[in-house]
Length: 73
Image (tube, rainbow, N blue to C red; front, side, top):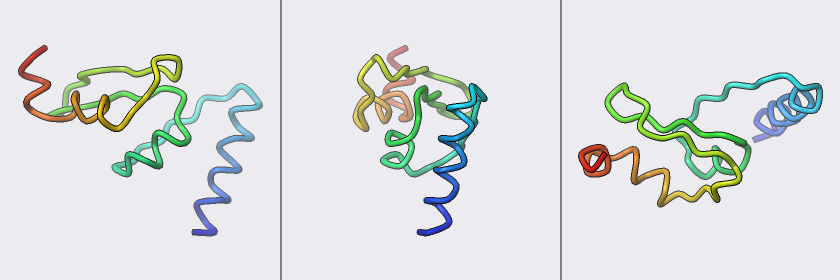
């Protein structure tokens, strides 16, 4: 757990410096907690890009990560 905290500190410092940070994670709560923008993929294709201003939620992200949502696009 301590290592993640240190990584988050480094990521936040880089963001303050105006640098882009790309994080790949399968842990949705973690991603929602730190990301400003989330690209959701299903079967290797980007199905949705969420910006922080859109009000990110686990339900919204999962909708685009599942086969049923991909079929509705």
